[in-house]
Every structure is written in structure tokens, then in C-alpha cells.
Length: 198
Image (cartoon, rainbow, N blue to C red):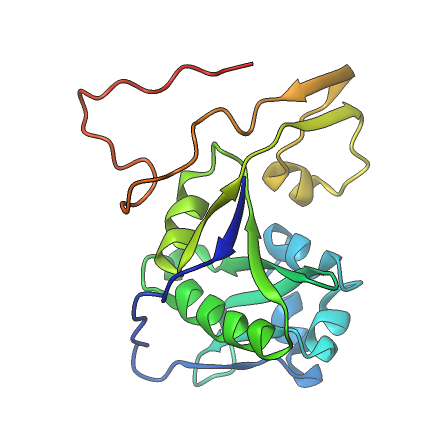
């Protein structure tokens, strides 16, 4: 699913002692301290030093200098800047990721690009964060994967691809596009789930 920024984000008040700021080279160790579960977020920049030095990352930082959430341009093209975000597990649901995404989107827009969001149809948490940040569904697609991914183990866990022995379509875009002004997957419990289409 591909989402683009089309609406204003919801507010994201920060807890006391937390600031959102652009990453700097001095944040390299703090990015590394996020651990292997977060290594994917700096992978497209060549690692923590590349991301911290890129000027394309924003973080929610505690008074002690610990990164609690980070958002960055994961892929950058001539028209779009694809957003990635990671929040430390015990700091989720405090809108720290939303605050970082909001700052990053303002930066991407100031650079003359359109912020975009790419995620699996199965990733409900990502859909909700995207919606809250002002992203709306632009289009859906089918992702194909073949053979071993060659990605580090942490990246495989968040990847939409699975190990397959032959090329197989991964049905990531099986739901009709969102047309109603409501968050994705906010159906009532008795409302049926749409059947996949081919």
C-alpha cells in the first residue's frame, strides 16, 4: 500500500523532558544503542553514522540523550521521500513516532518532495500511524518475492516478503481503496472483512 501526505497531522504533544530534533553525527551511538530490532531504519543510509550524518532523520530524544523514536527518509527520489519510523517498544503509544514523522514530513515538503508511506496491508499499526500523521491511501499493489531475501534477520522480520521457493505474488493490496474519512480498519465487529480479489 502506498500512502501520500494529503491532510494535516493530529497533534503530538511531547512528554516533559523530550525534544524532537534533527539527527546529528553525535547521535550515532544513540542510534546504535537502539539495537538490532531497529537496524533496518538506518540500513538505507549505510548504518547509524550514515543516517545521523544525512540530515534526513528526526528523533525524539530524552534529556539524557537517549533516542526514544526516530523517523527518516528511507528512500529519496526526485519526487517522493519515503518515510520510515521506529519507536522504542516501551515508549510506544505516546505519539513520539507521530511527532518525529510530523517534523520529517515538514522537512521533506520544504525540500520540494512529497512525503510517502509504504506498508503491507497486514500492518495495522503502520496504517493507523500513517492516517494520524495525515497520510491517505494513494494506491495498492502486489509485491513479488523469490528465493532467499539476503536481508539481515531483523530486516526479514519487518519485511513484507517471505522466503519462498518460487516467485509468488504476495497479496498486499487486497482491500478496496479508502474512500471514507475514517481511519483504516475501523469496521464494527459485525462488519465482514472484504474478500481478496485477484
